[in-house]
Image (tube, rainbow, N blue to C red; front, side, top):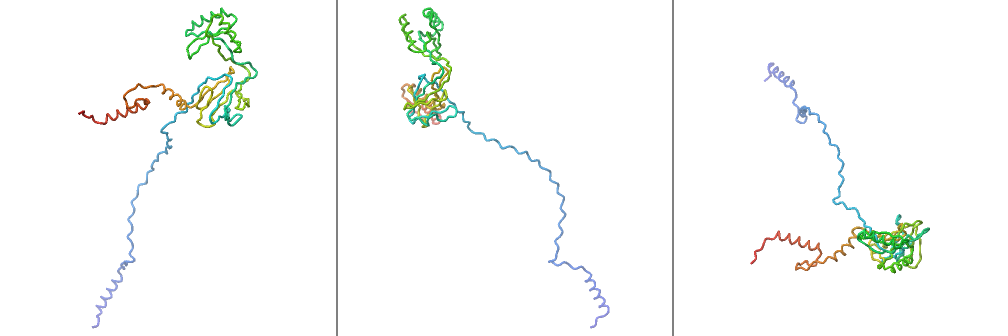
Length: 316
């Protein structure tokens, strides 16, 4: 069957129509759909940053109490005194704290008051009487002045005993004072005492050190410090034993003085036991009879706490 011209015309028009259509994209070449336009974001507002705070200073939980030292004047010979310790002792410069003369005195050391360019700083008087009332002392002073017009008569107040003392004379030696004692005895006075009093002296005051072999060394100071060579040892004199440190000095009257310097805690170690020995509890049936006050207080506190916690028991 031969195609007619009309069919050939329709076929040509169909081909032309197909060729004019746009070619559909292949799956492998498909383009991703365009992203939607981003909506405008609000511009960020500036955030105020707080100012940096300084780091807090750490505060200690417990504040240590400042160290407290106790100074106690001792009674000793005004001219010389011997100091020693079981493990030896060290004599130090009061400013530099360096050892003087020797690093250690094993057998102890004598301290001697040394005065140069002056007379002795001691005066000797004869004490006649002692009164609690100043009026009585002044009346006795007038009586003695009438009897001994050439001798100087003075009143001396003792704050420890709260008494007024009548003293007469002014001598440079004890032997000279003894002559006045004999004279007053002849006048009928009894209970007479020769007393020592210091007076200010000029010249230079220094301390001389003498070791146990009688070698001596004159220091350039009027005071020195003495420490035990072995920590914790006691310093000893003829009068007693002492904790801590001793300071020796020559005062303005030329007298040698000892001062015991120690921490408050060390001081209490020596004082509290002595005071506790004087405390004698009355005998009781308590299970803590004879205990210290602190032990008794602790026991009473515990017993009270138990009684508040435990229920009462009915007696049978």
